[in-house]
Each structure stands twice: as structure tokens, then as C-alpha cells.
Image 1 (cartoon, one colour):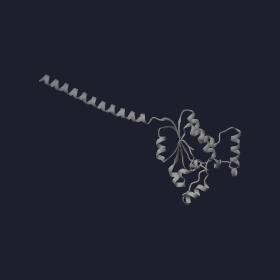
Image 2 (cartoon, helix red, strand yellow):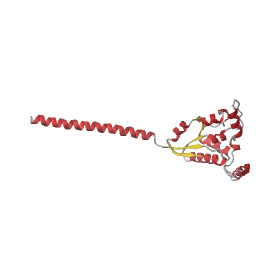
Image 3 (tube, one colour):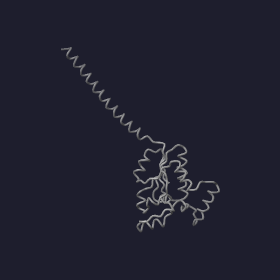
Image 4 (tube, helix red, strand yellow):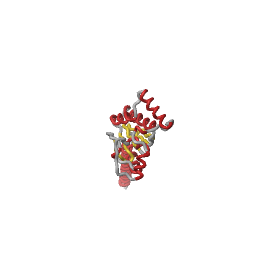
Length: 201
């Protein structure tokens, strides 16, 4: 009887150990799954930037930051929305088929980099002309040159589809740029979520 009792006790201990081992294996599998998920979300060497402003100084700053970031080894994604989209319109491209509101927005808003004005001290265009003259004298790249450089360096540009629809802009009137695409906010957020840096200009 004593031997049977001892055997039952030993069996109970073995069952208990097996149960604990199974529980540990389950916990380990859960931890492993969580680690894999975290690894997928690891931040990349990327800068994601929203360009909301259509002012010359702010747009120029955004491109200087973008190209500087690429030079430092970062991937750069720029999302142009609302007034920022105006600097990507090509002055040499004319498109038809717009409704009344689209025509009004097209006429009232700047067309391309050449029409941008300073956010401060514009002074009826005199301040902007002075700034462009000073940039040329100091050998600071113009907006056109900065956009070209950004394209050569691989800066990716998205134009907000909602803004395009709202303001009546058409794809055919936008500049020719090697990394240009059209997207909604979800696409930009997907890019931004794993970026080390996010900026709003």
C-alpha cells in the first residue's frame, strides 16, 4: 500500500511539473510573438514630413531639411497638403475640364515655386524679391534647384488626394518629379509610424 501511495505522489509531482512546463512554453511563445511584433515596429532611419505651408521661406526650409537628411543617410518622405500643394503645380501646364470652384482656386492660388511669397515681410512682393536676390548673391539654391536636387537624391513626395479633390487640382498640372505619387493620409501615416522623426511645416 505504501509503494502505491508513493507512486501516486510521484506521479502527481510529475504531472504538476509537466503542467508547469507546458505553462512556461505557452508564456515563452507569447513573449516570442510580442518580440517579433516589436521588431517589426522598430523605427527606421527615416524622416516623414508634412508640408502644409505654401510660403516661400517655409517651403524652402522643408526642402533644405529633406535634402540635408538624405545626405546624412536618412530616407525622406514628404506629404504635401493644402497650401503646400501649390508649389508643385507646373506653370507651363494648362489643363481643362475644371468646375467653377476648381477654376477659382486655380486662379487665386500660386502656380509653382516662382509664385511663392514670404510668410513675413512680403511687403507687396518687394520683400520676396529682395530675399530671392539675396539668395542668389549668397549662392543659396533656389526653390527650383532644391526641388531638382531632392528628386536626384531620392526624396519621395506624396500629394494629398483629398486636397487635390477639394481644390480642383489635376494630376496633369503637377510637376514632373521622379518620386512623386498621390496618396491619402493613411498612406502617409503608414510611412510615418516607423520613422525616427516626423515634422509638420
